[in-house]
Amino acid sequence: MPHVAAEERAPVFEVDVLPVITRKCGACHSEKVQKGGLNLVSMTSVRRGGESGEALIAESLDDSLLWTMVDGGGMPPEGEPQLTADELGVIRRWLTMGAESTMPVEQADTRLTQHDILPIVLLRCTTCHGARIQRGGVDLRTPEAMKKGGKNGPALVAGDPDNSLMIQRIESNACPPRDQLLKYFVRRPGEAEVRVLRKWIAEGAQEYEILPDVATTEPDPLVTDEDRQHWAFLPPRQVTEHASIDGFLAEKLDAVGLAMAPEADRDTLIRRAYIDLVGMPPSLTDWKKWHDS
Image 1: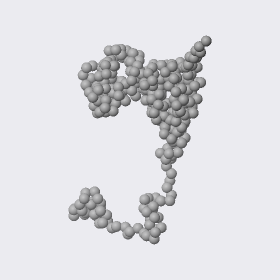
Image 2: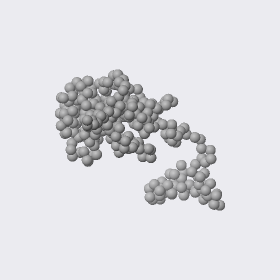
Image 3: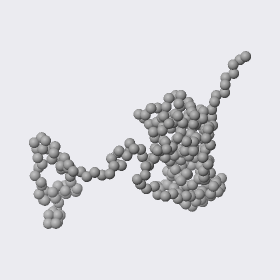
């Protein structure tokens, strides 16, 4: 009887993918550390994505940000252990075979707000509809500006994505214009991004204000303990050895038996300042002004 090959089992996130992510990506994308606002340790957080707004899981492998990043996109970063061919194969099969998970995705309010769509619009659209350029009189930096629109009317119609000009222009490949893609190094929104824009508009283009993101003493998942050792995160320290640059210079000069030149008199200082700043010595009037002040 001829041998029949068993059907290939679809990888499961918790069984096959999570161990790979934990080993190779967990240092930067976990519950405690979330570079780019990205947490990869649960299906809920994977589906939520990060700050970029792009979908980690998409119908097309090319539209999956997760695959883009691991397949030569800089994750893990240079200098860290890279994914092997077998590990890449597991992630690829998982994405293309349904991105299965043993645990149901946590149920939550899935309604979109301006915070979900603004990263997409700011990245893809504001080259032509932003602070410097507003083609057609359209500014897309805020929901209010989108609803106001420009010469041809509102850019979006809340509740009606099909009649929203911004959706029509994107889906017809009119925006961004073909001649602007290479000029400004932008690309058109992907399918996943268009679905997000459509969903937000269909749900009424809801807006939700969040509290300001201010510094506190609480741990921040965007900053690692290693990052906090950088001087920019450390409190200023009182300098006791040298109070100015002159102290460092004097120390080096003294080490070779030299000393500072005598301090210049006021007339010399005035002349030096004018030559440095103006390129000419001071006039008699200017000299008197500073000499007598």
